[in-house]
Length: 332
Image 1 (cartoon, one colour):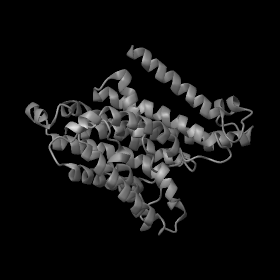
Image 2 (cartoon, rainbow, N blue to C red):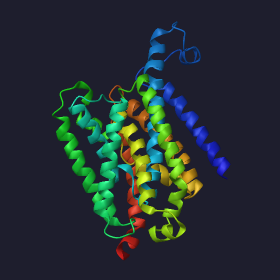
Image 3 (spheres, one colour):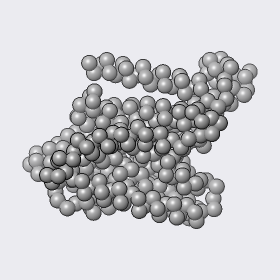
Image 4 (cartoon, rainbow, N blue to C red):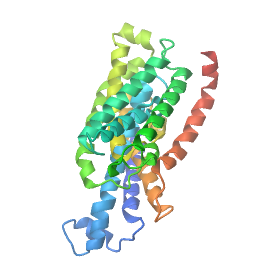
């Protein structure tokens, strides 16, 4: 059954990539000739559109989607809470604030390694602050965590908006970029930095995943087994921050993808965290590529903010989970 699901995922991924290559504001008359002959300049216009715009954008969507999918697993595993995700924990807003501060003082440029480092610091600080403020009891799986996370994220997002208005640099982009995200200005140069960051982040998540299996039993049982829940949680948040910082510093904040991908992956592959990291990465990549393809084609030549489309996917999942967990919250 799982092999069949993997085959289905791979098939969907290939079909989605093909559709993304084929559609857009400009029609490509010589798609296959240009795709199979990247060094040829016979069809210069099609070549530039495909290799300078669409392929880098598709690759970025796949990397960012994979990063956010794996980040969602880290968020839910670290907090032992099925409703946790980078945007709700404040990690995305914190990473955005870190990058914006770097831009404000002219230390970094969007998509640079320096921006990712600032984003990691900001995202980790915001996540730790949320966990500390919500720690009203040993068990982290509490509605308090979600409430505090949403409040923290909203506060930081407001600071990001105010700070962005103070920056005169063109690469600071707009408040909507940091709120809803956009892949419109991604280039091949972004991939040179984003790719190793995502690989490092997913590998780190894969390494810490078995300890999250133990952490899901509760902090007390984890200690009895020999796992330090505080250290494990902090390590998971570092992996989470690396993944989110890479995404946010390149394409801005994209909400709900980190919530949706892990739950979709769990339906087919169960709750074990190590395979869940990899499968959530694949699901996240597929979802974001579909959302980005819709964002640039549905209202062409205008482009929709990609975060709005991912929110349309993630919000119903969040509502369903809230309704299912309402009785549990009443008992806490």
